[in-house]
Image (cartoon, rainbow, N blue to C red; front, side, top):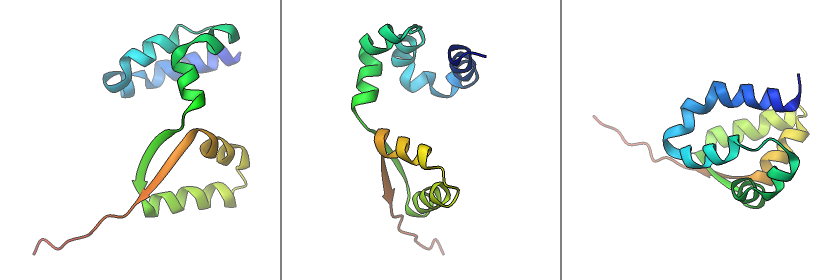
Amino acid sequence: MSNYHVARDFVERHIHEHKDLHGDEINRVISVTTRQQLEENEVTKKWRNNKFNVKMCRYSYNLLISFLQQSKFMGILSLVNQYLHLKGIFFLLTSYL
């Protein structure tokens, strides 16, 4: 199966999870079918040139990084570092008693 078909299958499986918040961007990206279109598309240029902010609790952040390092998924770790800005945040636990 070609990369195009793998990507298309992925989009079809997951589009409903993101359509409400990112529908416009998704519509502009799913029309891309060639490398030239990929390089010229404003949305893909934005995604490749800017990091996407991801907020997660500090514990999840530590688990993710540890898992990637211990499993020797250096390629994925490299992509995470290149395209994501992970923000580990602390939650203040309060008692509701």
